[in-house]
Length: 144
Ligand SMILES: CC(C)(COP(=O)(O)OP(=O)(O)OC[C@H]1O[C@@H](n2cnc3c(N)ncnc32)[C@H](O)[C@@H]1OP(=O)(O)O)[C@@H](O)C(=O)NCCC(=O)NCCS
Image 1 (cartoon, rainbow, N blue to C red):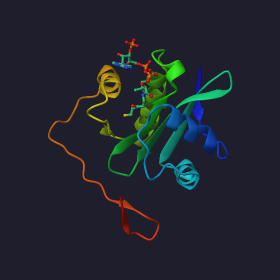
Image 2 (image 1 turned 180 degrees about the vertical axis):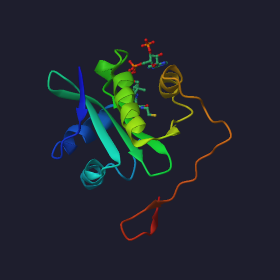
Image 3 (image 1 turned 90 degrees about the vertical axis):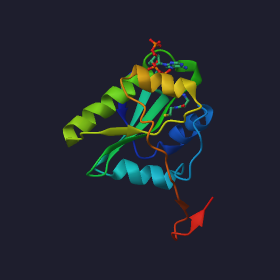
Image 4 (image 1 turned 30 degrees about the horizontal axis):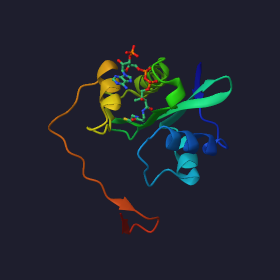
């Protein structure tokens, strides 16, 4: 298994596994949004590859204040073999290079596979926090 950076042009190879991995869909699951994050010098869009097939992904970003992890997903056929661990380890190396002091991963409380993973990876739940979100279209208007 190899962890490497996502290459522009393989967006479809990522969007499909997200759907197959039961990752909760989000407004930014588009080719245009993927290209934009991949082009940012403060983002790492990483994929895990086995036999030349993309089987997992993670997006790590630094906004100048905190590090954030998005879209950790591993194809169901390749779980429990350390793929997510390897992706997060590579993301953490990028955070260390950027000088990040706190990393946040948004994790659905009712997904025990996800909370189980993050606890095993050494992350602590922050029970004080709830998330407020606003989804917008490209004109800045609120959408569901
Ligand atoms: C969560 C997810 C990314 C884990 O990927 P993975 O490659 O199977 O994880 P790893 O093999 O690296 O697991 C490392 C450790 O995490 C924990 N873990 C992983 N899956 C778990 C599960 N289903 N239940 C409880 N703990 C789990 C275990 O301690 C595991 O070590 P072990 O296999 O030696 O016991 C994967 O289940 C997935 O893609 N789920 C759907 C999408 C999702 O929910 N993503 C998380 C968004 S925050």
